[in-house]
Length: 176
Image (cartoon, rainbow, N blue to C red; front, side, top):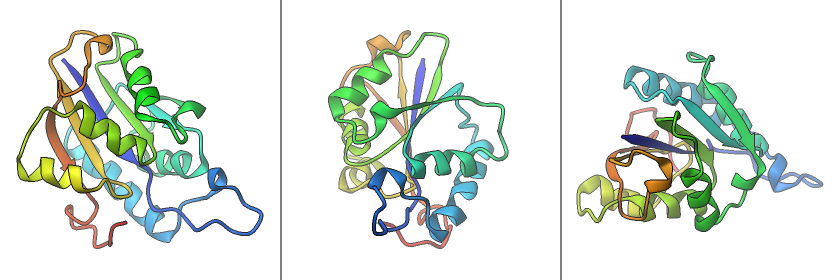
């Protein structure tokens, strides 16, 4: 079995004059919610074997504050995840080595949202409908696959195990 955990970066600051989108840090709301999401992941048994993180500042900041209670997790930063298309993201996931059973990807919309909806089996459950509507900042999507290899992960082959947002988890924050 393969488990794919998709996490959109937490809420980031607006672009300042002379600053690139790539270099935007998390804002106060993003800094507040990220450790809570990390605690939720740990308590729920959602710890990855490996985390692959976009190299943008807001995704690196999300990772830094997310994994404070599980710092030994192997991870890497990948510039291809920044503004990645569905095709690029699918290729990256399908190229993961077999020894990684649970993969966490921290990246950006719209690609991350497209990946989640593409890989999810046709489902009309409430959580599937919520996922199709939007993938807010710091939202977490867990997809399970019966595949033995990541290369066997195909569109509509994943079971949507959960889709959680900071608001749904009661972190008291609005979403966007």
